[in-house]
Length: 95
Length: 243
Figure 1 (cartoon, one colour):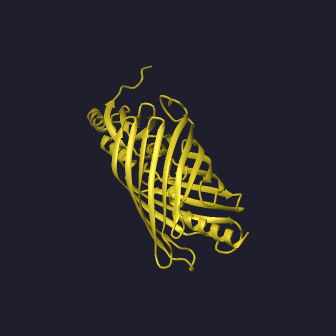
Figure 2 (cartoon, one colour; figure 1 turned 45 degrees about the vertical axis):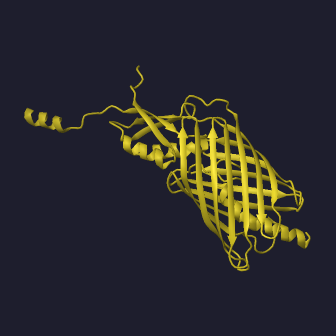
Figure 3 (spheres, each protein chain N blue to C red; figure 1 turned 90 degrees about the horizontal axis):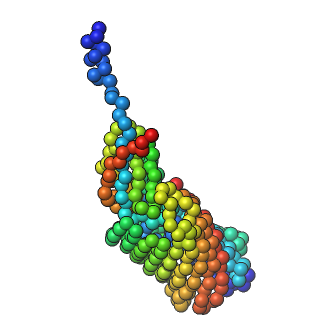
């Protein structure tokens, strides 16, 4: 019985923590144009939250759980008409 | 309304079909723009123009549909509100816009796009047309500039037409964006526009406008002054949504 339980636990998915990335994006101008980028990124299935900084020309993206599909994110940025630059993984805020 | 005024207004309405597609995407008030519409994104615009001198008004319905980050389909349809009567619908204009040069940096973007399309008449008394042009947009910090030129070749008995636009937009507020998220924006717009029809000299126009942008919504108004030929002033209000 114990062996069965151990085997079951081995195959259960491990609760993954959310991934957070900051991406520098070049080419963004006003909020009306960037609205499309926000929509495009928000529709990706693994993304929980998107925040855009027009001031610093970057996006903060938080996954639902587990790692973000960075290639898909870069493709969405290009499809929106902008240029993805450096991607940084960041730690979640403490507390 | 005198026959001359009616003819002039009908010419204006026909000319609107050339202008209408340009009005779909941010940010010039009457100019084309080379800024992107996201893939699958749709911008719809409804515009109202009034000319007190000729006691005429018209609406222009236009849209832009993003095919990719570099490809956009633009369309527009003018509609005469006054004077009432038959044939109130203008011609359906459509343009394909392909951005073929793009240089992005952190606080600036420069893009040049090709425009190609046509005009499908909604009236059996007029012929169709094909149109070709170019548009360039240069944005840096609080300033944005659009330059465009479009030539429309009339088919059959339809005369040729053309336009040019030079637009400068300056962000009045906010002076600086917040760290994250969007805040309402105010822009002032200054434009020099030219509209030409075969057999007539070009009308040079001066447009002064104000835009309020919030998220996916733009509300804007402007005054258009024709500075040569039949001097007249038109008033414009418009709203556009980004879906």
